[in-house]
Length: 261
Length: 88
Length: 186
Image (cartoon, rainbow over all chains, first blue to last red; front, side):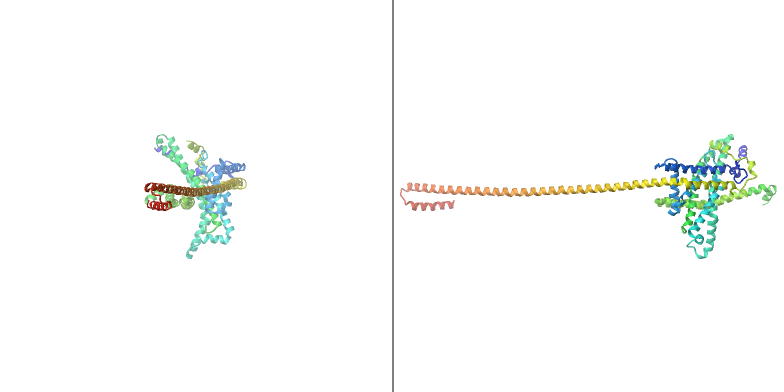
């Protein structure tokens, strides 16, 4: 028993998510597994769209294979995200939000792909960059469509608030819009994927330890079953987080376009 | 108190690390209570709404996910604090 | 099993190497954020410039085609409805026409029957009247004959009976009166 538990080594987080550089070591352009996966994700998404575009250009009106995936994704982003949160005026944002949705989903789903098994978004880099981008975009859009004063007025002073509460509300709204929004947008994706990855690692390590260490193999099915269930759950989480990231980006941009949403 | 002092004298580093881990664990656990209840309320009411008006289920589902996302942010901030404590 | 071997094969570097330079995982690594930005930007530009318009065109073309076929179907349906209405109208017309013809035929048949009946009745009446006339003429004639014969016979008989040669004129008047009386009594 002691032997088993002492042999059970749960790696610290740093060991799980930090990867050795492969190319350009110790430069700002160091390439490691995470960067490779980013490239792979971008490439996969582009190839999906490219082949779907080719299929569409060939004039096959009945979509097949990849074309179905891409078109149903576009349809989903268009009908279930943009039209529900931004209205018809948000339709020009479709390519942007579709790119976000597919890129986030593909980089998430690496978590459960055998031999890759690392969600790129369990590193803060990509979520932080995308959240920052969304932050810049919704502020620029807001200032462009309502003017600088109008934008801040509609942000800070929501209608229907009693006069004596206005300063407090304005402060809260400012903090929540300018600081909490990008932070929570990035952290939501990052923390979900990191937590999922840690869960999978925990049960995988547990299964492996029990599997190799003899007498306790009798309880092996429990963590292993849990590992399988969690893998399924993480697929769901990957889709859900891509959806939530996209819909929140849409809500923020749409809210900046039309105040009093 | 004297026990803690004794422990602190014997192994201060280990002691602090342990206390930090306890704090992080309790902190995350506490942070998960509110959002857990909140998400339960959100989903429950969304299901009520969908059952009452199945024709508006799509809209309700979208809003439900939005509500979950906003509520969940609190739990995630707890998770982040947990990581921050561990790596402070 | 595969999951485990995969995990082991891709296990990160040895614990010792990382432990000293472990950073807070909530802070993005510089190289990763740079490459992430590049990847996303390149992907977005490629998709919005090349891939998305093609896919969108395909979707739009399909929507257009479906809309076209729906319109076509709608048009065809309306046309068919028009034809159906026309047929229904014609059918109703034909029904009315046939009803009218039947009614007309019945009326003319009725009229014909009435005419025939009247004619027959008239004929019957005529025949009857003629027969009546005939009969009365015959009766008249027979009565005349009879009267003459009876008068004659009576006279003869009376002559024979009374053996007296009466004045023929007087007798005849007597007898005539007698016969009238008898006829009236009869």
